[in-house]
Image (cartoon, rainbow, N blue to C red; front, side):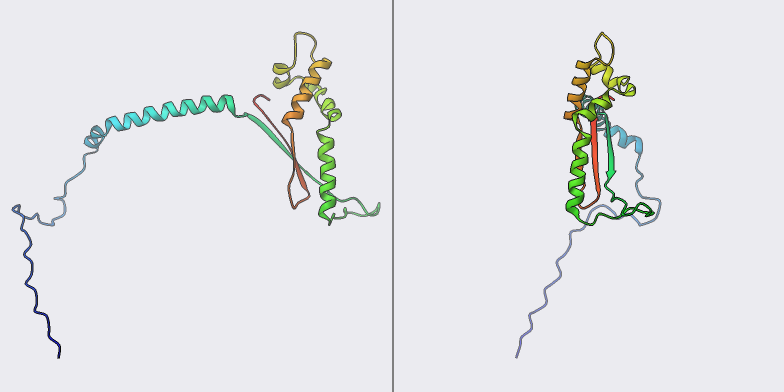
Length: 177
């Protein structure tokens, strides 16, 4: 036989001395936006000031530290014609051949003779980058100026093979164009 536990008497809840409000729509307390703004005015103003100061500091740091101009050129390694009368080129199926060809082309693109020929072009000699960094008081395009420009290009240019593809890139970035 089992015995049942006697039921507990209900715990009396404390009653509030205030009368209950009726749940009639329209009697809810409205929010005043101007009062909320006045209450948080110091926090809002300090947030705006902090944002302006941090934005200005970030702008100055990025202006001097990050390059402003950059360029990337993508090259594709394609196969050669098998026969002189073929309408399309053959596909290079072996990755080691693609890697070898891309490495050869990357080396040739950043070689000193190619960079010297590129810097001697009249369009390059008239750029802001060349005039501000290398052009002296004498005639533009002197040998020592071109050598300095080629030295800087050798440091700034970067060639990269895109793995698993027939593509490679040549990139440059600098503070002035």
